[in-house]
Amino acid sequence: MKLCWIDVRPLQGPVKAAVLEEAVHQRVDAIVTDDIADLSALPPTVKKVLLLRENPIPEDLTGAEIVVVDTDKHGSTAELTQRYPEVQWGRYVEIVDADSLEQACRSGLSEAWSVLDFRDPTKIPLEIVIAAAIKGEGSLITVAKDVEESQIIFGVLELGSDGVMLAPVQVGETTQLVAAAAEQSPDLALTELTVTGIQHVGMGERACVDTCSYLGKDEGILVGSHSKGMILCVSETHPLPYMPTRPFRVNAGAIHSYTLGKGGRTNYLSELVSGSRVTAVDITGKTRIVTVGRVKIESRPLLQISAVAPDGREVDLILQDDWHVRVLGPGGMVLNSTHIEPGDKVLGYLPTEDRHVGYPINEFCREQ
Image (cartoon, rainbow, N blue to C red):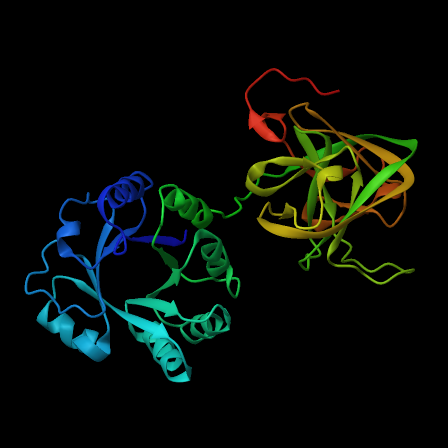
């Protein structure tokens, strides 16, 4: 879980009070201020951070848990720890050139807390700091100008910054930041399904989903005719005799089929477009969100695979009727769709919720 620090230094009056109330309600990790009086009324559920850029260090630090300073003005955090052992100390670094970038890298290795403020919009300096500080035990907190930038910061070098410090300009942005920080795709419990029938069902449109990511040999996307049962369709990472591998692609299924998107919402394959987000899943159930680069919809002969779960639930998948289209079985076994027979095992997922416009909902719904 990424850390969310809310900076209230630029705020005043009712807006400041409302942002503080929202931040406490959303259980952010820390409130940041330059006025120690702001910290006294905060509950113990949030860390209380005093950030001092120009201001001197107060004689009394009661109420503060972390104090972030500019070491050029206030002295080293090691010296300050000896003088004020009751609080944790962190370093603020504004990165504007090669020298300050080097300071940020050293801070990431040695300091418990490093608050990084990058002047320029490029994320390459942050990449450098993350890589340089990989063996450090402290936390990198990066300043974001808005929620959209925070989402990028969380994903830089795949590891991302440990946290983001955001100064909201209006109520609601804190909630959005917390949602962005929690945007991690949960693992899924996959189930071994037993194939009960194979049927050639004639022509129809199928969708190839081309993602912006390399997919693994044991990874694909979940596809099914019904929202409560899907089969794991493998990416085109396994060699074929007549064409090169396309490790970004999943030949997914007929256009009416469901797949899992961002946040557990389902989408029809026909709805996916460039920029859509889908859930990639491997044979252990580990997931990640990937971006769709394009979707190719073409008319092809189709094949219907019917399967049953151990609890009796039925699962249905219609996909292209061709030998090179594949699904995954237990242990990562790759099954060519045209070679599948009744009794074979495939990997699937069995959501329990019904769906309304893709969102899970508890209501009566029968799919057949």
